[in-house]
Image (cartoon, rainbow over all chains, first blue to last red; front, side):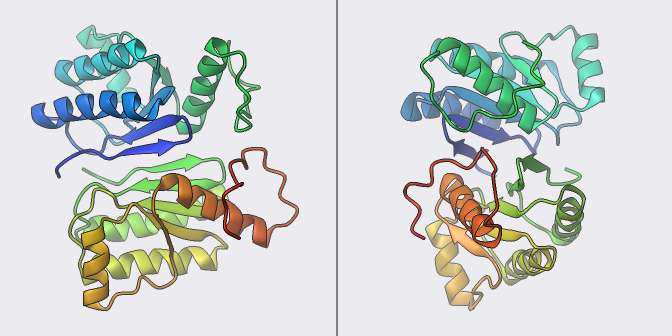
Length: 137
Length: 137
């Protein structure tokens, strides 16, 4: 595969990671995502890692980098669908995924992103903003 | 990779095909999708094939099957993100992708699905139903 596709959904970008993020692919995803945020003016990135069963420090760092870079361009990053084993590995490796938020699944991640965007843009009038009753904040 | 992840987004399911759909994986995707439609009561399936650069008759048949099976469970299927070369190949192979709709990208595909669902369920009151101002029907 050449590149991981980035789907634009409204003001958010959605990426599903289905393959091992080896070096070139991960760095390309990083730069593609940042370029796409800049091009589309997206306010948030949703990264689904439900198909990822093995995580290492490189992948943890790449995801963290994406979070920090996007934040510089005023977009929030939410990682969703983490398998329990991956959460255990991340903690045991001492990789806290700094700079990114996490949510259980895509729907909750979307809700989280919408709430983050609303917090920063109180004039938001996006009618897609529903199902926020179970947000913790 | 074990399986292609299926993301639930509201009343629709989203699948991004990033790898070659060899036999087992394609058949598993087919059965996973149909089970998921049955389990979640999803009204539509969105299949993004923007990362697919080569298509063969097997893959064309699998996508067609998914469309017909989902239709039996009252869900519409929309294929989005087709590369121009893939469209050319499909026509040259004589594979018309029967039973599925197509759209240029995920956003237009979502709009198409929403309009299809609305046509069949006029009592729809889903608040996520936005951005319909440029729908053709």
